[in-house]
Image (cartoon, rainbow, N blue to C red):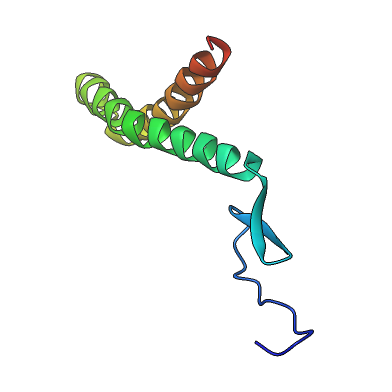
Length: 92
């Protein structure tokens, strides 16, 4: 590296570092916590959508209105994932 040249940024906001006199110090760990929280929310939603769709298929077959209940079931699955993750966060 040339004298006076700035180090290139990797473009990642998860690991923000700064160079001072040859050492590397971590400035903040907060973005990693936000990313972990977003990942948990996405995982909760992804796991609850199939259950909502299954419930929608069952109700749709019973009521003979499959299209409506698949849509409602997937919506309820998304809502269930968000509610579960919100309840888990507030329980901490």
